[in-house]
Length: 436
Ligand SMILES: [Zn+2]
Image (cartoon, rainbow, N blue to C red):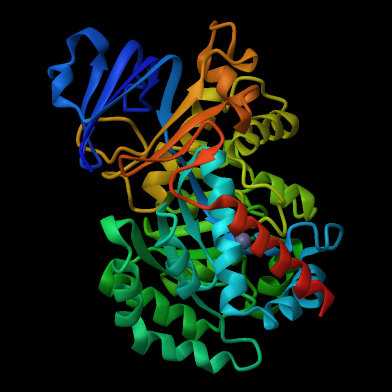
């Protein structure tokens, strides 16, 4: 992979001290960061590097982390924009999913990866079809959490139980992507699609192999009613009783929560993934982010799938996060832009169990880096760069997306990828699904 030096105007490290460096350089070798600091103190000669990227106006930030998505659902973007979640899922999405072929999913994934790279996303936690995700990651190598989905309260639900005997196969598939880019998570879909026995088994297996558990939690009012009627409890109380809530839990949505539930989520060190665009568009509600943060919950951000949120764009989600909290709390001081950027980087890394690997630009971490165009009208003037990134920046300001030390996207072009043919096949397959 070689040695690369990146010279930029600013590095926003998102490290523990939130250091912002001016006229700085980042060096990395074989995908691992070896230097971050002032440009004139770089401890290597020019000849040492195979590649030197100089961006006079560049602003380096850690690669953004999309902690909850369903990548191949890009196939269904715009299919049914105006339905409640239950109807959307049961009447529209599940019948379409029954028609999906492996090829459809493969191209759906590739299209989503192209979109994510163009919006500065380097890592994502996927919750969909495992094998086709892996096949696509071999073509476009982003960093990913691949989720083994489980749901048994559906027709043929018993087939998912067999997956516990096939875990080795999933580990091998994840390892078949080069560079250690893929980790496995267990994914109970939700409390209304999984039996208690299934959730208990998942908690046990997660403990045994130290695997993250990726789950939809307290997403809709219907789900709250379901828990109340079926178990006489709130969703979080029910999950806590099962023993599945801990620091390995990646809980997507977490919208409808009372104070007790928020306290439990904090005590159990659960990671909550805020997907504001999806939640608003499906009219699900608003996650109480401020209250969760105050209860020491690790809050991170996700785009959800393109079928529900339509766009895999974490700049939108950072901005929406702040604006929504201010709208519901009437408090203009918390959370702020810095906290939103951390949710999209450091907090996301922690949620996915990748805290030591990515989420900040620091020596020893993987070189997952995004370079923004600091000369863009949206990033000027430089009174407050972080504020510009959260409130004003768009994916059009992404110059480079670097994953594991490799430039995968640069100025609108994808490295070594035949984008035109991928998107043509993807688009044709998506249209065919709807017409058949
Ligand atoms: Zn989801």
